[in-house]
Amino acid sequence: MSIKLPQKLMLLGSGELGKEFAIAAQRLGNYVIAVDRYVNAPAMQVADAYEVISMLSADDLEAVVKKHQPNIIIPEIEAIRTEKLIEFEQRGITVIPTAAATNYTMNRDRIRELAHQELGIRTAKYGYATTLEELIAVSDEIRFPNVVKPVMSSSGKGQSVVQNKSEVEKAWNYAISNSRGDSQKVIVEEFIKFEIEVTLLTIKQWNAPTIFCSPIGHRQERGDYQESWQPALISEDKILKAREIARKVTDALGGAGIFGVEFFITQDEVIFSELSPRPHDTGMVTLISQNLNEFELHLRAILDLPIPHIEQLGASASAVILASEKSDFIVFGGVANALSEKDVDIRLFGKPNAHPYRRMGVALAKGVNVQEAREKATRAAKKITIN
Ligand SMILES: Nc1ncnc2c1ncn2[C@@H]1O[C@H](COP(=O)(O)OP(=O)(O)OP(=O)(O)O)[C@@H](O)[C@H]1O
Ligand SMILES: [Mg+2]
Image (cartoon, rainbow, N blue to C red; front, top):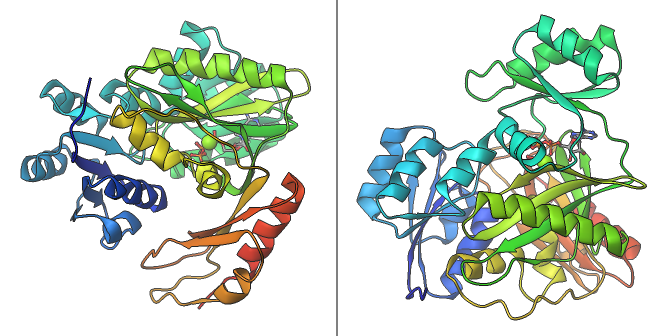
């Protein structure tokens, strides 16, 4: 297949990941339409056109597709009416990686079942519940501690670690009140005492073999990533195992594009957790750590352009810049101070407003080793003040 440039790309979701993707797409002269549910979203600031709609509304999606006639639709978030994407695909629009894959990964249950039941991949032991009584019963099977999550949610929303039976009801209420849509279904997972958790960026291509980035280690708090680093220091055999799993799952999903495949690594196991069929937030470290970052890789895979070589440029890290309070008028301080160190860079996303823990930017650093890179990135992130 040979795809002619420019292409008309419609981004569904226009956050910081979409913004970097739009920049990569623009660099090759493509036309980008950025869509999100609020005005002035990061990717809108660098796109050729933008639309503010509810991406869960089939009618809204229909209207923007009709208006802009994109060749390719590129989802950036999970909360999209994915049934509508299936219809667009049937009408000849390419959906990345495929419409079915976005549908599979929208909620936690289908992708989990694909991995575990159909492909026989090791995951945390899990079960489902749709009532408190069921949750109590499944929790007994899975045992404690366990993790309760709404089947429909992301960024750790509604998720809690349950230590014992007395905490089950609280976890149920928390999950149900933070579930997306009107879903009443929760997943209970065995709590994995991992040594490290990693994202394996996996690039699935239309007409070339699947390739991988060096694994990225990350640390999460409140369900959101705080820092990530590359390379993650795990053994070669575990890397090969993770690649084998990532290849299996992405082959089953099909299509083309980058996937962020998440794993828990224990002393002797590589456990599949979940995946995003798109660039991953922990992969922002690749903005400094690779010759081609995850957004450029996504673009090349989508446009069927060659990726002759992915070079890891040495120990690198990213650390998030979070807001601490609500604000509708953002002023950053400490930027000069943050940039005063060698091999440090930052991205400020340009989000129009802030609330506690909202990710407003990211600090990037290279170091002599991973530890130094992490310290530098975290130091730079801490120097940035908001308002
Ligand atoms: N079974 C588990 N055992 C131990 N830790 C877990 C488990 N499930 C989740 N976690 C922790 O919670 C984090 C978020 O979980 P998960 O990735 O499933 O949720 P998410 O809401 O999809 O997050 P995101 O969309 O930001 O990736 C994980 O990265 C991990 O740190
Ligand atoms: Mg996750």
